[in-house]
Image (tube, one colour):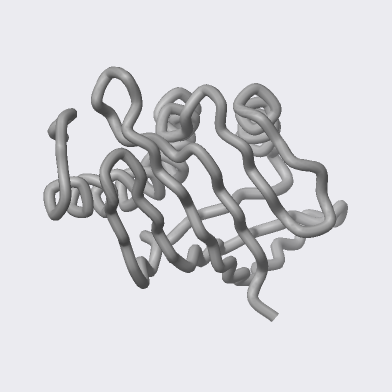
Length: 139
């Protein structure tokens, strides 16, 4: 993917990066998954404390290490990307397929959808990364 992008090119780059993120997640590529987020990212989710980059990546690593649960993400449904200078706002919906194995070894699966607003910021190296991510489950 190109590093230095503006306007429509930024929108295309961000869209491709978000689709790639779902692939990276499903492949359990922790470095790539964490790499889409800026070092000073703030993640917000209802009923939980805000998270920083280190806390986020530690949580992703713990999720990937679990043997009793797997989470598979579909590519996001991107509803809108607005680019203005070095900032971009993305409205999107993530769909997660969560498979749990009970103590008796019987699997169960559920689908969760989560709305989100991600604010991307062009970093000093020219790459776009998520600076603020606000996710909230669909009712």
